[in-house]
Length: 155
Image (cartoon, rainbow, N blue to C red; front, side, top):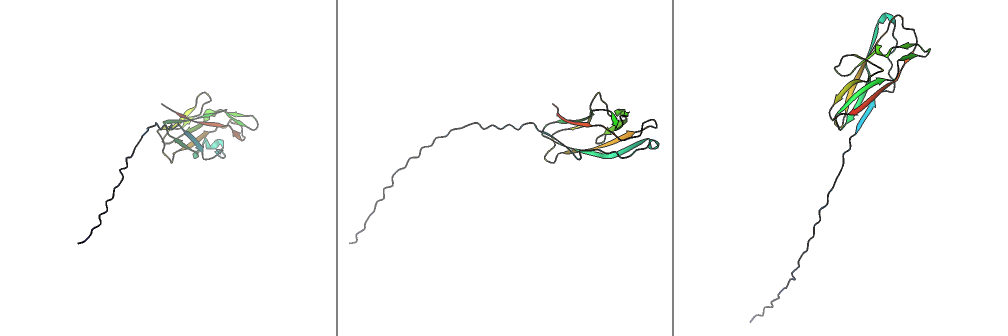
């Protein structure tokens, strides 16, 4: 007769408890506008009255980065003034952005150079051309002024 040894395994019965909680997660992606100029100076070079005008293509490039619709404007802070104090009316300096017509600057109102939608990570480059008209009765000298570029969101 053979003896068999029977082993009985008794496994304990484990009960698992579970508890869940939910919470809100919020994040705010703020409106961001970034404006970069390719240079801190714009030099139109020398001009003579017999040239009538000088055109500087891509006188400056403005890089716009934005996550909202935007508009880029430029305005002069003064007329063109020489180191001797002579003045050339700023309206004789004209600008144009991409595919635009030349528009004279004005002390009264900024001019719109470009506008657009969200730019993406690479941004949007706006090349600005300049045209300056000179006359024989303009006093010789080195003239300058400051231009203010402004980037605003639009809704």
